[in-house]
Length: 113
Length: 110
Image 1 (spheres, chains in turn red, cyan):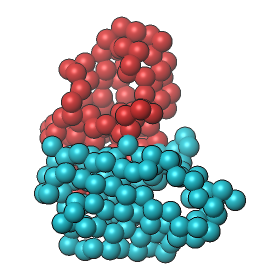
Image 2 (tube, one colour):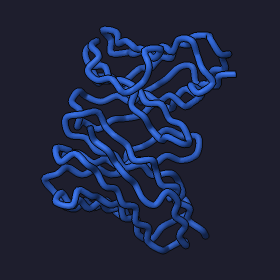
Image 3 (cartoon, helix red, strand yellow):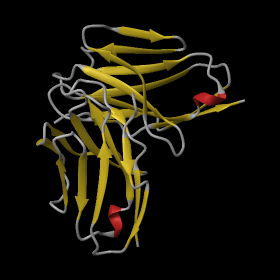
């Protein structure tokens, strides 16, 4: 099976802009989780989608949002970008329940100037 | 909510020695504990996991132990090799999203 894919791999934006990141899960996986990875904070949970519904949400401001489509592909959006949003954004897919193994994508490296 | 503490943050070992990374968690409802390895510039990859109905699990040179009473679990790597150099993350979950430790940078010196 093909692994989790993410597009784009790299993005450079300026403050105030918005950005949309995409994640395609492993075929048959219905859950997609998003994480922000920074050197100081490690992997922080953003949100999780299951069958097109947001099942859990982390402690991030409302500028961070996401959605999931009927084919399980997911997007996350960050509006009004700030310098502190520069990070590696990782998505992970799993079969469905929270204790299922999560498989990560390669990530999108976002740089905000 | 769940909180996962991971120690040490950096670890250097000589090739062939063993490495041990320890994590503690706070939520007694947690029952799934995966470990991920992330090489520089690559995605985190699952290397081993353990569920709360077992106390130890081994896979070749890697083992994980779980002490539910003390709420801690550890990763043991024996006969370390240069390709084991990476950042290792522990994580825990039960009914909540996966919570990660802040990572351990392991350097294996040849």
